[in-house]
Length: 368
Image 1 (tube, helix red, strand yellow):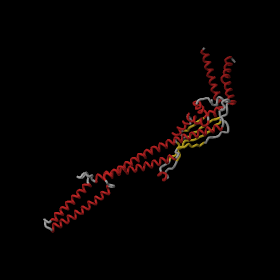
Image 2: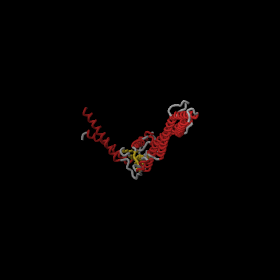
Image 3: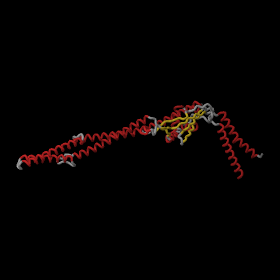
Image 4: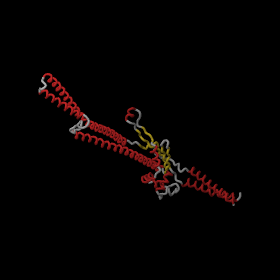
């Protein structure tokens, strides 16, 4: 063997074998065992069909997943807010920095900032999200099985609270919109009823239709009186002289009745009478318009009230909830850190670094 061969072997021992032995010693002699707790869940949303569909058997309550809510939850599981809340609740710094003196590599440095804690959180908490099914699986690592289960349970509780907050906001928005519609419907109905009241006070009429019937009866009576007067006048003209004063009186009576009939018909016509009184046609038209407005306002109010009641009923029901298909598990044995996998990865990188260094050194030597 030449000198370069001995140098190559020495460099291999120094750059590959010795660091790999040190890494193996640390992994198997100093690294503290880590225990995993797994929890899996999804966001579910209740959907309820209309009353007609339920009575008809076409649909019923069903649970469906909400991808948008699950996306929000996935981001929340990696957020600083969640880490801060769990740290204040469980003291994550103390849980993850307990074996710091024995294992400074894998344990958390308690003097680190919140950003360091979030970074360490993303290493100790692995979140797997299947966007197709909407399922989220979380694996939590800690240095004792109890701590891992506590962190997983706290994570699940915080996630459930966050989903409940989303539901509360959505329910409050729905109730707020329904309440605004109900208030507008109440104002419209109140204005329509007040307009009808003002009309009745101004015209001294409760219902123009009833008053119109009275006027029609009056016209019928006048028509009958006119017919009787005309018959009596014709009979008197046949039996009495033309200068008979009774004929003059009957003619005067007939004229008065005709004038009264004409006056009553003018009231039932269109326009304004000579005395300046509003005719019944205009009064009836105005009353019908006000009545239509009031009926429409009443129907709108009933519809808005039903929508408001439905919104309140929906608010009483938890339409979004966190469904756990795997509750936080409790580990019985340690499977982390994965010493064999870590050692293999370290060995590969050390070998690649040594090989690159040798190739660079030989390249420089050949150029010289």
